[in-house]
Image 1 (cartoon, rainbow, N blue to C red):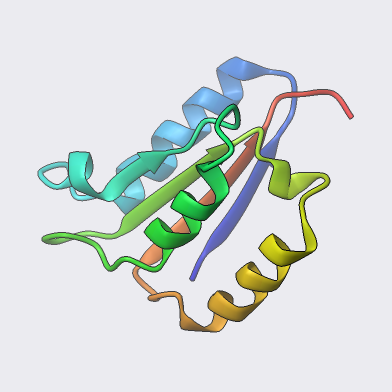
Image 2 (spheres, rainbow, N blue to C red; image 1 turned 90 degrees about the vertical axis):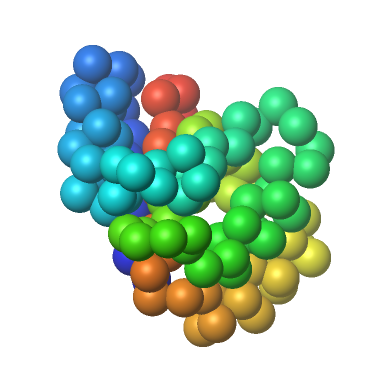
Length: 105
């Protein structure tokens, strides 16, 4: 499973690069079904994203799960890290995970 980490404060370049990845990864006819972005504000974001990462794509193309400013890039619970570690080998090869961060460290 491809995993990408894009970071930086230049939102123009991040937006352009994300758009290029979406174009390369997703079949445009199935993009509404196979692209999911999980905002970091919700407590349920990580569990939902982990579930979505395991779901094969609908139709043709690949699935892209985008986690902008995710807590997985910083401090998260040990149970979430263990869950992520256990599912990584099982993730379908047709799925891509994208982490982006625009916050200064």
